[in-house]
Length: 429
Image (cartoon, rainbow, N blue to C red; front, side, top):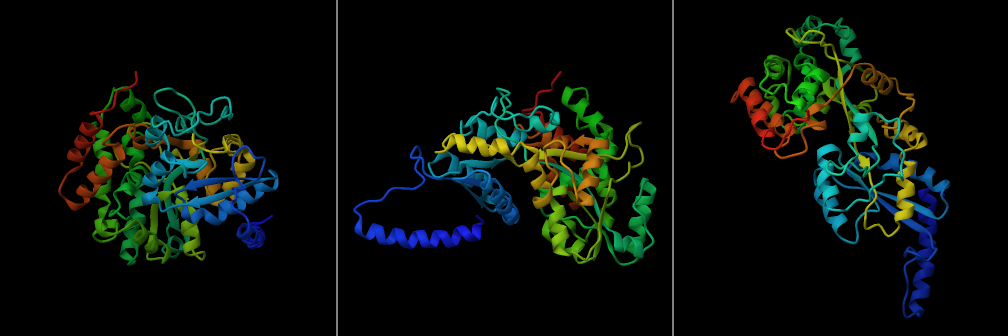
């Protein structure tokens, strides 16, 4: 039965229930554990924009799981962490919470709020980087099922490129020439919302990952053989200052939503962002023909460094230790590890599923998936430097804001990042 149908039935049941309870001294919940009655599972998330997609997905699950109703309840993203922590600590929290990944998962694991899933879900054959996002750092147990693999890349307006005689660049020189041509035509080349510091490490990855060396640098810095004061890292931060003239005026006063509006209104030709932005950009202006490309290596990039697509696992689902229906909740999360669910995430949520073998009908999703498969690298400040405070993304985000404001140079931003993470980070030999 669809949610609309259930709403009609629910109203009829409610009317009948009111008649019965008017004559009855007491009533009991139809969803109490152990009674054999129908079960309602609540799924919490920070993805308000995905409500309709998840309703459709869970309708399909309910069709093959009689007696189980799944209610998707999203909250405002900026308030979600606090709401989730309170919910998991009390008795009114979710059965299946959407949890963060990598370092941001650890506090939830340490609180004892989640059920270990080893032996209950099968993640064999999955991307190692993705599976790592779902584990407890201390005990190595799996506590969640990864939902999506997010990637970062440059989105561009194909119509504006064609109008100005520009092709997607394959060299840095072509990239700069394209920016100059757009600027001369009165078009903002790159929409960046630097007011929101969380997005700036993403912008850095999109524009400058090849300049610091991508995966090779990640391996070096996590092993302790390199640091964030490395000249290649410093030069990669400087790239953002070098391209500042191609950003909106006073970029630190521009919010991410403002940048998206500039792009959707066709006042900006490019916007660096995550695969999670695709559906938002497509809905904002369906008339815009969107393309994606990997920004080519800037001059001075380490030998062998190539254009790359950085990625990470995001938005995992777990089982609450306080769920009144742990078996049913575990069964739902187990289903979330299947190709059936992964395909629905690709088709309905318009994200890159973490489940191996999913196919993409959207050509841009397919291109992003192929780019990551063929030339992927970890978004290292998220995958490896969010296990302590201050986190790498927090430090670089604020540092780039100061770089764009002119109060710090690239060397100082990099030194502050290095000093900050070394207060808690231990290299892995």
